[in-house]
Image 1: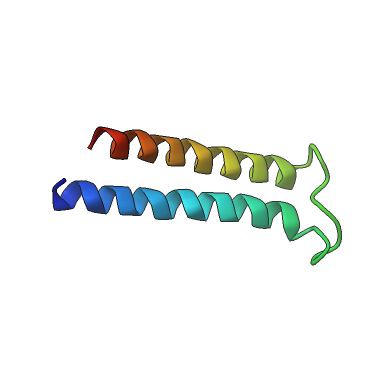
Image 2: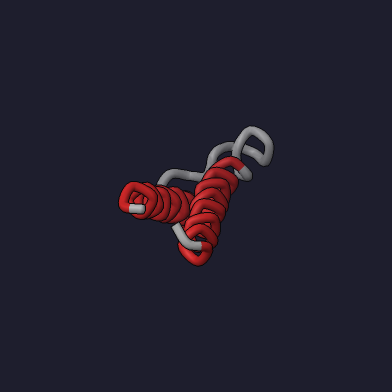
Length: 69
């Protein structure tokens, strides 16, 4: 595995982690800490879904890349 691939994977792992955390924060910031979970169907709720979905897609892509390396 060369250095470029390694850095690409590291950036991908960090990006997927950030996306997942951003999605969870989007849901929870209106949660017990900030006043109740984001209303289902609201813009914040869909934003959370989008971030978590993007995080899992990135994670799946990384697993495939590492599997092929």
